[in-house]
Length: 153
Picture (cartoon, rainbow, N blue to C red):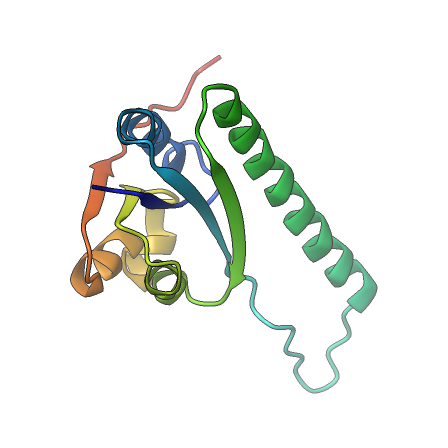
């Protein structure tokens, strides 16, 4: 039924709450998984007389991409040990648009994600990714509400 599942992650523990659900589905249905990370980093735009160390900016961005790939590879390697085939995609730009585009381009059968991945005021001002996907998706969507509780340890 769900041969390919798209799982957008933002690197937060809240967004990872979808992973056990996806793992269970993939094992039961023998689905493959595409992990998606969307780089929201804005292009470097400078104002008049503004000075920025471009090398430092580019190095931070390269490190972020490297860290994201390592993070996804850890998940992929774990799943490989239990027989789940997964791969990663890293895209740049609008999160909602990239989720929708990837779902279409990859002909995924299900998009699975947790709501409130980053949360807080950042999402309040720009709108929820989950709501944006929900309002525009043209295929099944598994959406769980994240209930991550911050550890006091």
